[in-house]
Image (cartoon, rainbow, N blue to C red; front, side, top):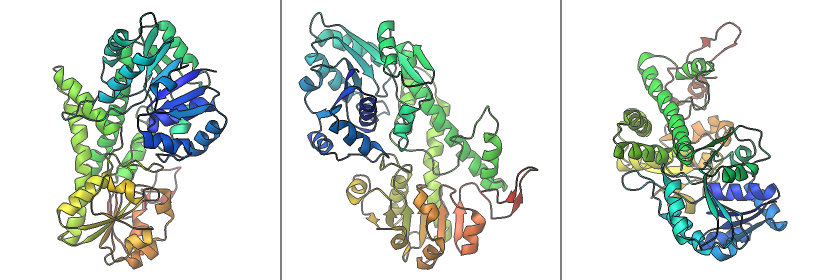
Length: 450
């Protein structure tokens, strides 16, 4: 049993705190947001993540998980401190490190016993070095400490599963004993544990996210070419993904990537490369392609409606991906702004996002109570987030409620031939006019978009 302090109770901090507590450790979650801490003490979650609320309540009731706004209280007995504060994009795309600096300085001021400081926040390469300098300058004389980089690779919507079943654990430090102490916190894991230097550990996180973003942008570029040449990107993606050197994950054409990690991490890595004399053309192209995916939706609508002025457009989904309520850098936000700029009336429905959450990102977007009210008298619908609920909805009823039967499938969720047979003016990403295709010998007869 270890005594752990988690600094920051966002997606990463709250998940790690609850999961470490679930493994029998004593965990204190610290945040300077008083309202958030009071909600957590009442068992109310500030974020939507499947299974998290039950885990938090269970461990809090057993005395293994506590919440506080006091650094003194949080570090009274802590042996390990996980830094899980946000590092949003700055003006030039750089990582904004103000929260990290404040957290490190505040903990150094109050620590009175040996502490291992573990950085979970995604930070620029070299952060561990200045952390060591800052702590050494402010910590009480004679109190030993170590700095460790331990980047996180959680997927929102699957975060608890990812904590329990990681692909790898990366630990970087100049202090081998500290690195091995941190490794012991993950005794439950059966995956490889990579012990490396701090700078390499910090780079592994950026390089991983940049590569995944690149993979998504690549298939979206292929989708655009498929549309012009009459190929089906679903078949192309399947054929590519069966090559073990490529793999099928992150190879689905759609509206691009969003969320809290990919956008800011690709921008930050680009910024680091630029200010150190590199020319990151590929990273710039990855961001440009992603931006263009949202613009393509607006063009598809304009081509069908002629003008978007006063057209009523419904967005199916607001979250950047299913099983989360996170709208940061979501495709829905950019699409809504682009449509409104051309005079459209934008409505939306999302299974978990309420008015207050949406209002922080969107202006003048009415939220419907369900997909059917969203469809009522709409000129077009755009599938933005691939929630399971949308796969199961009554599409014939949706079609009957619409003023015009225009449906843009931004996630290639549906079979084109079925949508056309229902009566929709249907378009998806990188797939041609519906036709029945024969799959290779050993497969089955069906649509290439199955």
